[in-house]
Length: 266
Ligand code: ACM
Image (cartoon, rainbow, N blue to C red; front, side, top):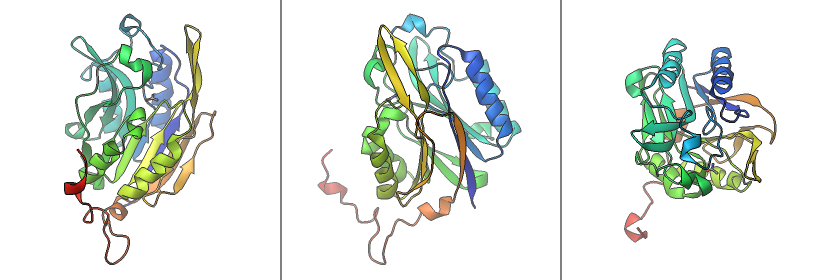
């Protein structure tokens, strides 16, 4: 079964949740694909240094705003994935909501590897790497967030657990991830989508420039579709999960069966 995947590259307005919700909602309503994905921390913006600055932007996973997006997933029969600041008791996480048309399949991933000054406000994620299975579409969706890309173990864990598609909502500030993510797709024979943002944010005279180039990569490591480095755009590509399930690349070799975990360093 083929599936249409849309990635939305945009510039979330800093600390303006109303604007970001409206922007995302408009995209969800206009889009007629099966999955729509937005960047890391889409609802809030990225560069915060103090917990006191994110109190009004932090959301409970079972709160009103996430529930509203869950309703859209049900109403439009669409998987909706985006990053947000999650509050759980007194802890904050850099999280992604993976909202499925069947609420029972929905889940929250908490970023495992915290980048740079994220460490000042967020706890390290404790959900681990897992896939969400969309039964109706026979699709296994794995999620990581941005800096998780530097750890090949993240994609490998998701792939070994059966991911067909790895989503990486991101707020990337370097350009070195592109080769790595094409390699993650190739070495695991899975689709990979990096959903980055554009624009910049400045705080205390430090500026972070986010560099776009959001991309959907095929299981053969080739880009299917890519955005520019500074424009807002929604891009759609067709993927076929069944193509990721045979891990052989000739009549003798299979990249999962050929692994030698007993020889690997833990
Ligand atoms: C990043 O993890 N936002 C670079």
